[in-house]
Amino acid sequence: MRRETAYKLAGRRHDHPVAGSGMEKHRELRFKKLPPGQVEQALRALSMLKGLEVEEGVGEYALVVRYSVLDYSLESLEEALREAGFALDNTLYSKLVRALVYFCEETQRHNLVSPERLLKKSNEVYIQAWDHHAHGDHDETPPDLREYK
Image (cartoon, rainbow, N blue to C red):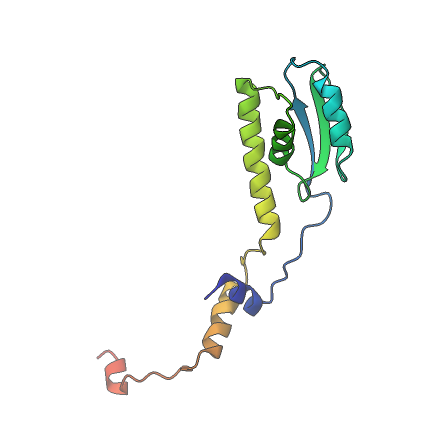
């Protein structure tokens, strides 16, 4: 039985979670020192994107971005910046944080678009599937073979 069929038989809804459930992200983009002036250029470029808030970060070479995980991901933003010629910080710490954030956001996006899991109504799926099955509940085994003597 396909997963979608099981969800329909159990009567599950496929609604997205409510706002404020961790979909709004607040991330820091770190740049290299060279070339000079790239942080200001990146600030102007990112501020033109709809649904993305950008401001200067704590450090001299950092920007802070706020976005919904349904609209953007840190990976897509950083990839767009790299393709535009910006040099992002590539220290070991930045690589580790970046990999963790990429994985978490990808997993969250995947979970948001997939339907709810069947946790408490899974037995109803099998009951309804059995009722809809063509053979019904007839057992063709002779009665004398069904009983253990």
